[in-house]
Length: 268
Ligand code: SF4
Image (tube, rainbow, N blue to C red; front, side, top):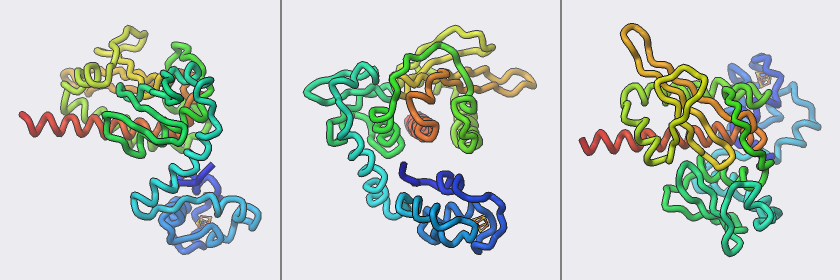
């Protein structure tokens, strides 16, 4: 597995923040490694076996083009091992001429065996990386209908606060400022209003990927009460997509919502 973000590096470290590497914290060291300013050997607590095991797997940030290449090349290589015709059902995808068409965020994305992706939708790494990971690694488990919060998808708690700060919280603020966004989620992203046992003004299911549904529960602010905004996933989501990919996909989804609301503001 490639190490392409600071959190992946952080997991390897002792997390003592001892500063012997010359930076204030282990997290700052992780960011410096990804930027190419530090190397694993600069942490004196890592043994040589661990350094040689992981140093070659680090994908450092360079230009956007170079970064795309570094992230996508290993995934495309792995994709060649996938039997497309045997995978359509597993993925909830359509198969035609040995290409898979996967509904991602309400839009069709067609992928060929070499990893080339076509869509009417804007294609960026936030979508492509989770999409290819889904095709390669999804267990194909059918959603069970039991909704759980992001933190219960995996024991990798490191992503929880990122999910809250970079997706759930900004999306709540965006929805508070632009209540029409809920309508856009229904029409543009083919969201489906549902009844749930959660108390909310609206409960809406979106499908970032066919077997990775997401439930948004939103209650508008009322009098002195602030709005309530919660996101849930089917309990099987973590078996069909890694939590890091779920996180990336959600951040990509937030970016799309932000662009839509900006367009609304410009046109009004
Ligand atoms: S030397 Fe290692 S353990 Fe100490 S702060 Fe740096 S990265 Fe963390």
